[in-house]
Image 1 (tube, rainbow, N blue to C red):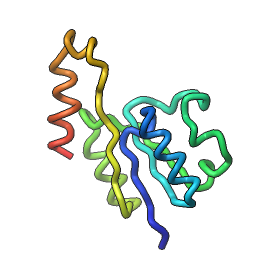
Image 2: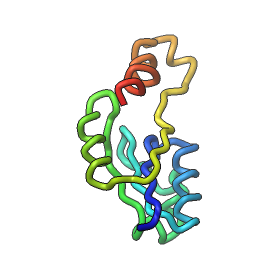
Image 3: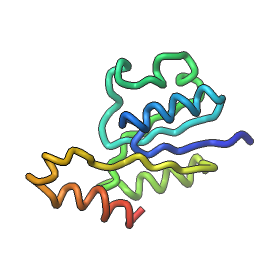
Length: 111
């Protein structure tokens, strides 16, 4: 069995480029993000045909759907799990710091 990667935060800038790299290397990739997949112009892994064959996407919010994520992990049995999920906009974090704390700390601990 080939190595399979699960990339949490696959819609993020860093996550989407990492997914692209993995697909270019021939790996099977499962992408997870709290938002639906963005337009392909923002997702470099969609720029080649490789993502159709070796990429699956699940819209899962770590703050609310942790059981669903664990189910995906049990079902697909990834060899590696890479986590790019986080909220990073500093200015907005001052407006609702509890949202940033929930996503960047509590959800990570629960996972």
